[in-house]
Image (cartoon, rainbow, N blue to C red; front, side, top):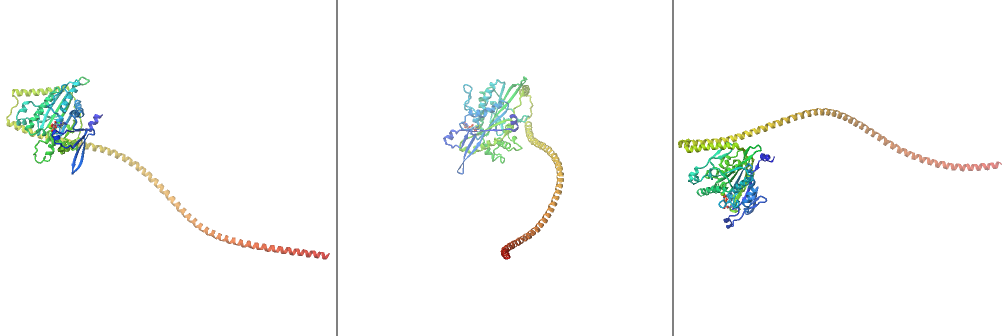
Length: 564
Ligand code: ADP
Ligand code: MG
């Protein structure tokens, strides 16, 4: 699962930083320290003084090794997992990048002169990545009791010319001009890769042999150094270890697992910045740094996801194409010096390395080969070599005049160049085709999406139309009801008005009645008074009457008595 995930998304190039300790000379001169490493936080801080102000620029990497880190620490923390992957059948590449004198060669090879294995076969403390990797490979393979073979190649790339650092002695003894002729051509291998024709492949059978080989290679590099004015700072070296391991399938078939480790000691990075300004105008810098410049451009193109990656522009990038954005697992060890006089280069190295962190590779395990096929291939190779040996011995190969040979050679070169250009063209065309195809597929998908959406929309529309007609009917009904209600309201208003009028009339009547009432009350009052007056009169009358009656009675009585 995770493997597939990894394959699809790609894994980033791992970038480590190593800062070397002060050299004796720097210590003697009391050089100020401007680089500080924090191994736990994986950070490097560079102090700068700009216009009298102090700044710290901080960079983060996958791993950081400070001046006190030993060869063994770096190897165990950073390289052991990579070598294990090589043993599992991956191709892996480790680049050392940095200014001259910062420890690229020290990290990759170590101090070889003193590097002789100890009494128990253990490595000296100064041994670098190459001897330790070889040791680990042999230890692991012996431990597994596996049947295996280990082959190494060691080449140098200087001025776009490849020389074999392992080639037999007599070649390295010949004069420089001859040596230049001995440069090896790069050829397409027909499987999308390149190979260096005529490169010596040394079979290694034990870890201790590696020192002899390294010394042979380094010695050759050293001779050249004195002759070619510090060539090593401008040359790249590539040490490759190829491992074949025999495995048996459950069906008893024998398979060969193959893994390859490339260890690249690049030219000093100061060569880029120095010739960078000039490149493109005059070719003063010649081809010396073409490979380093192209490596930078390839990294830029990969980081910025440009369409065209200029792998084919230099031999280094052709050789290591697969390590940059390809199927190889890649690690870059950037080396810097802690001293202030290297500040500018240190910052440029840190920027470059930080940028490279963004490259993504898509590592793939090499396909296992059937042993029988491998043997068939080897027989073919043996036949071809036999033929060559025979031709050489009998001198009965093809002989042609020198002029014709040169003419044919130049024609061949022109054709190869043409083929290369056509290859580039083909590649861009293929890429365009692929892009167009991708676009077409995307369009078709979009189209089908759109038609699906259209269908849905039509269905929605139909439903909406139905809903709309229902709504319209309802609206009509509502309008009718509204009209009715409005009519009723109007009539009610009219009735209300009439009522109000009536109320007014009633009110005035009422007011009149009130007035009448009041006068009535007045009248009643007057009547009451009259009544009381009348009562008084009556009472007076009654009293008078009673008096008169009394006097009458008295009169009657006196008259009666008189009569009597
Ligand atoms: P480069 O290959 O980058 O030009 P070298 O590997 O030749 O640099 O290193 C320059 C000098 O610094 C050598 O003498 C080497 O021994 C020393 N040196 C570099 N890195 C370290 C380190 N980490 N510890 C001790 N010495 C170192
Ligand atoms: Mg070096």
